[in-house]
Image (cartoon, rainbow, N blue to C red; front, side, top):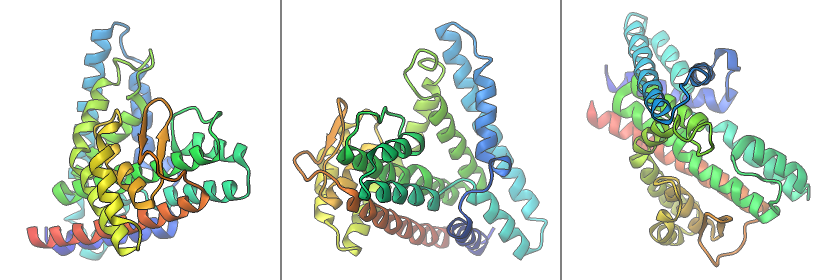
Amino acid sequence: MTATDRVVPLLLALLLDALWGEPPNRWHPVAWMGTGIGAASCRAPSSAPGRLAYGAAVVVAGAVAAAGAGLVAERLLATMPRALAWVAAAVVLKTTFSARRLAEIARQVHAVLAAGDVCQARCLVGYHLVSRDTRGLDAPRLAAATIESVAENASDSVVAPLFYYVLAGLPGALAYRFLNTADAMLGYRDPSREWLGKAAARADDAANLIPARLTAALLVLAAACLREDARGALSIWRQDAGKTASPNAGHPMSAMAGALGVELEKAGHYKLGAGLALPGPSDIERAVRLFYGTVAMAIVLACAVIALRA
């Protein structure tokens, strides 16, 4: 496969995302993954050791199946006319990442917070962006939660899938998306998922070790290009990246906090950029600009690496 055969589908996939966003669930492989994970979790044994082993088996089998589907897709694409193969590959690749949808939701939160509708903002943030209870969050904390989600998903939803696409093509991107979906569904410490989701959480942590740090570095570069505080981004990244329970989420979030010059806090868990200004609605829009700047940097880097590898 030539560099062109990797780069053109990547650019077309980004164009598809920009123009149309997410496909309906009935056509979305990630929705299929979620359905499969949900069905499998209902059949988990009751004992803790059994649930741990079962969860690990689900993760391994699902990731192998996703990678296998990507491999089959690439082999089928090799039999198609080149232009058609590019379009088909772009459609498959698009389902592994999402940029437009995240920006749309963040801007919806910005709009309702700017209008003073804290109640609606709580609903949007709690339903679309975070798993924490948003009922007691005030406007600055809702803005902070939104900015955190934008930063973290710059890695999980864009940079990481592109990283694995560059590394291993469609099989790599699809396998990563399965691991991330499994963690999103099972990787919690409540009684029903404490043991069942451990393997998913650890696999997702391992898969994101490099992408999360790469995202933070790209975010610093984007801050410099967009006249935000690149020095602050680098400083807070170094200072606060390890303050989150996740080994990865703190990297892009702390870099974002420093770039915007705002404090991002999850009460009782972490405070990134402590002592900086509390974020407001306008900082959400700045975060979205930085998000798109980071995505642009990631695209340039991905194309360059593909060309060099070829």
